[in-house]
Image 1 (cartoon, rainbow, N blue to C red):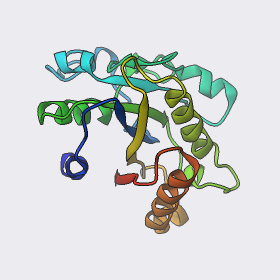
Image 2: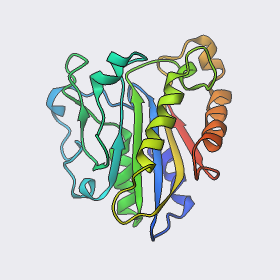
Image 3: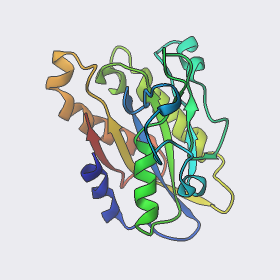
Image 4: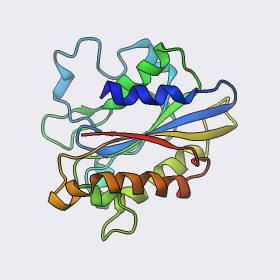
Length: 209
């Protein structure tokens, strides 16, 4: 996964008043389904590294496609900094954090600044949920709504934004049809987000399973 994320470093994050935003979505490991207290993860848990307090973070996760499932995992209530997200819905998961932590720390330590992560992940589900205009595309709508909410009031010091990257971690819940069409559907997801999000014309994407 680290190799995939490294490709986004080539984009040249710029300093100034424009905030580069990376969107994380997907299911299961994108959400981060961690055991209680994250035992044994020395130096890794969200909020345990000084870098975490430097990176703006906006999140709204959901368990499924229902209002109750959305409410179960909550949201950040606005811009915060990198840290664990609401757990307690799945047995043994007292909180959630995923690839956003390692990715943001890697960028920061490589010298990049003026970037943020917006996370809109789900507890499970096949890629049909991220396919715009499918029979149930609630996760596509949720990603768009979450990003729009994040950019409607940027963190202090930023007057503009660019949707620079999409980090998509999804696959374990795909059925046979979804697995066969995973590449095509990822391309469609990128194309649709470029069209439906402001300042996303140059959006790049990587995905993992």
